[in-house]
Amino acid sequence: EAVTLTNLDTANGAILVSLTGQNIVASDVVAGGTNNIVLTTLSSGTITLGTVTAASDTIDVNSITTVVDASGDITAATLDIAAAGTVGLVGTPLTTTVTNLIATTSAGGIFVTESDTLVVAGAGVQVTSGNGAIALIVTLGTLTLTDDITASGSGNVTLTLLGTDTALVTGDASDDIASGGGNITITADRLTLAGGNITSSGGALILQPNAVGETIGLG
Image 1: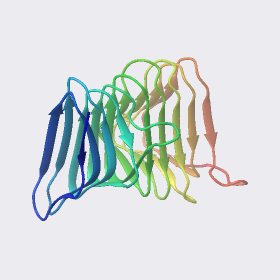
Image 2: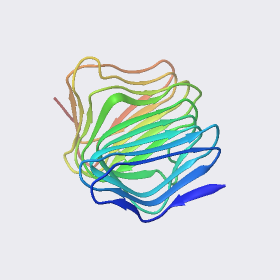
Image 3: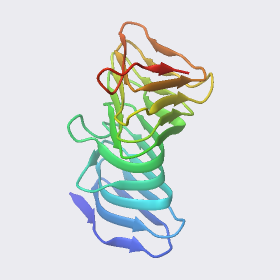
């Protein structure tokens, strides 16, 4: 059973929805002003995100199972996801326009496509158990790490920056990109690494520029 949230809008107020044993389908949810959105499922229930907007604040998504994408865009200053299943899918990643991304799952992978510049913030982007992959695509702008991107087990990490001359940036020595044993693939025209480690105990590290004929700039 699912509860569909349609035209659930506030002019200037927060939106908090928590359900036990039911799915949440957020097809059109907008928090006006500087106000947040909190969506939570307990005991069971997936969360589907369509057009969900907290343009000047945070969208918190807490799913006891998976978080999946529907038609629409997720817009916020910060998107903070905690799940016990897959976040997005390989063919249908979460589509976002956010400044900061925090995402953690204990099973499955994390798949997000961002329309603009993205900062991996807070607790980072992490698959904490199993062999789920992480795939982040940034359509325009830089990808900046202020915390780790970590895949457990044999999960691959794929970071793709599609903009010309855009950079993958690490903020300091504690900002790691890691997999337990999967491949790490970075597609970007520039790498600006203040520190941190790129590690996999059994996988390959693949660095490639976005444009054909381009060389990767290191700085």
